[in-house]
Image (cartoon, rainbow, N blue to C red; front, side):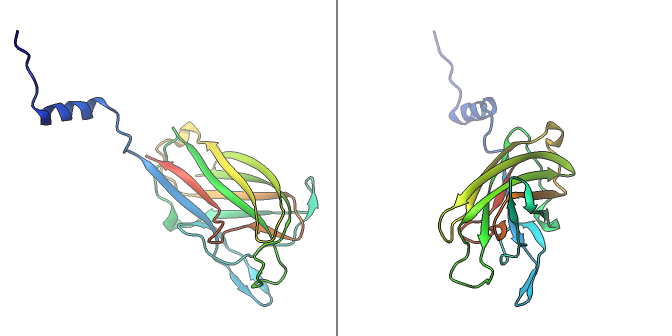
Length: 196
């Protein structure tokens, strides 16, 4: 009995067709940033999501606990040049948000101060709310942050949708002093989107 064999190149093509490709798709990262101006008399924030972290801390005073007190919310919106990619709803949207308490005087050796922070982080894509992650913690040393990891399932109706806008609202529930998102080089808050 004679056994027929395929040439090596033909066999490789058949194997490639039979095995699903994992090379398809990838990810897109958007960083939290502040494009606003900062000066001696204060700052004017312009919170954005961009291709790189940037800006100086520019947050308002937040004092409160368990959702009551002088607490507010910051919204970060994508800039036009950072979007335009296609989503893969088969994978989770991930990321990390670092929350910090800042000194009253910027430019000091202390970038952040110890303190408790609790916040709800809500992600919206193309006007569709993806979900909310709650996190809390205590920064126990200078120049340390409260870290909140994100992992959210993307609604199926956004599968293969071209991303036109992303908004992230950080609502503070507990804070002491000047509190906000950290977008420094060492602790770059970011979102990672699975793409198709």
